[in-house]
Length: 143
Image 1 (tube, one colour):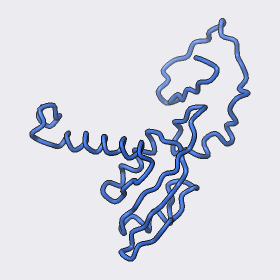
Image 2 (cartoon, rainbow, N blue to C red):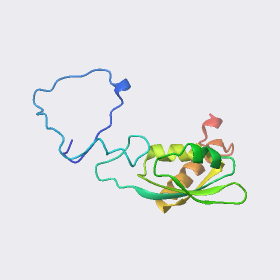
Image 3 (cartoon, rainbow, N blue to C red):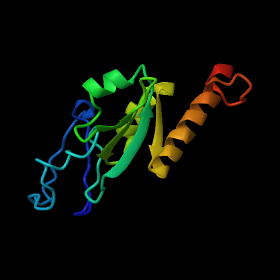
């Protein structure tokens, strides 16, 4: 593993450990872990990963929840709409955990930017749709 890499390990999945006498311990002097995870949902973040400006719309059903329980401390309301829905923004790193959280709101959230996140979510939503499309030959529902 190189000097500029981070590795997250799930402690509950470690089955055994071995001491390797050939490896020399090097103290971390690169990453300040007291602040490293401030701009991320979850724990997946590389050393050089930078936060992106996320903009999304939430339905009238989800807006009150997102106002009282923000997804991240950087989240704020951009605009409330007459129907009770709202536009939000936040600044976080793009990662799998962020996608999972946003997808968990289903049709109650529409991500507007950045384009890369919109593209990733769209691909995952389409793949999910195909999983439930009974006409799809590779669908697990057909097995």
